[in-house]
Length: 306
Length: 246
Image (cartoon, rainbow over all chains, first blue to last red):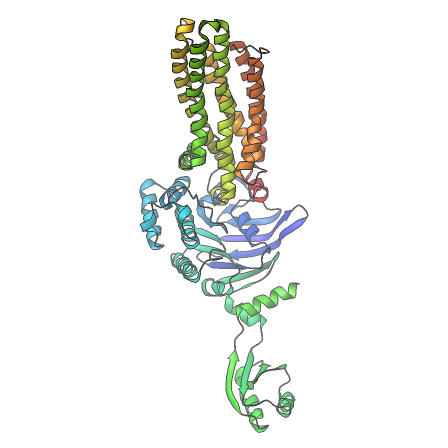
């Protein structure tokens, strides 16, 4: 559905994104993770034909970005939720959606039907005749989502849709995104909310001007962080740690009453470690297998690029 | 070029103008002042000076007052267009708008129509009121109804639209650099200065405002319109808008 090859954007001497190559399959939710200024918004803007590319190729469906004739076709098949919602404050919720529906050439009957359906789904139907300027941030974000879907696009681009929202509004927006995902739409999601990416995205790309890695959340976790075992003891002594170092060649960290050890094969190594602790006179209170989070992966990758 | 999308943008802008107190006042106050205020001045002058005011002086005054509509046509569209363009910039609504299947030229045309129609509409309504009230005020002194005549006909039907277009195009150019609507309006209103110079020139007798003069001013306005059209379309490019306007 989206194919990107060696896509580069420069603003004068500044390279905003460089050599991006990835694919997004139909019906997939693809997350773009990266720090501020990493080039996430620039990538979305290029894919939505809002700004030109400097180098490389990208296709949306069968259309090429950068070709004037194709740009209009691409914009017909996509919906955009920008980082700033950009609603018309002096128009009502209904009028905002109706205006965009007309621009997307949605027939009047279907337009009204979609407006009602989306506003009801997002719990805004009761406020359809209220000016958008009086809406809370969360309500505006929901209205921007409805606006992006008014023409039922095949692909939805979202630029940090839950940024600065309160937890309740963020949850409503996330639930709505999951609902859209169920409808089989392709979603390209820019975010720096790692938890959100992990919960919503099928695959994640980590970007910092260049694309650093791409994979499913599980693949990313497995590929980059070694598993760790955390053992809480009644007391940690020097002799106990020394005894352990003889049988556990990996790094051992002491944190309060806890020993944290890098392990390669937890099922095999944990019983040996616990036996060794017991032999050295230690009392095990709790054993926890630490699973690396996406945050660990993200921070590690971004740190490595510095 | 199908301009239905331009009309959609224009209709949306006009709806917004009518809801915002500031833009509504911009559309109404100046036309009311010239449509009612200037005939009232004429009435007072005639009632106080009577026949001391010569017929030639009175007709010159009526022509000079007619020129206020040209000043209005250069000012009101600027106020609306600047508000519309910089307003979109401030509300960050240009990005989702540009993501729709509308071309830059249709969007620009829509913005232009949205500022042009309410401006020229209010000035035309005002001109009818002005002509009727002025005729009522001056008929006894002149012995005939001065309006309508060819001079105001050309002024309203040729020069007024040309000046309104010029005003909109100028607004597009100045809006590119402005970060708030008032700043854009301050720069935009500079277009009024040449019109004021012409008005003062007519008042001091340096220029006689007749059909020939109106045609010459219209010709100059047309040339400037064409030049500004190219400059404004070059300014209004989506990449420029999203990366440099914001």
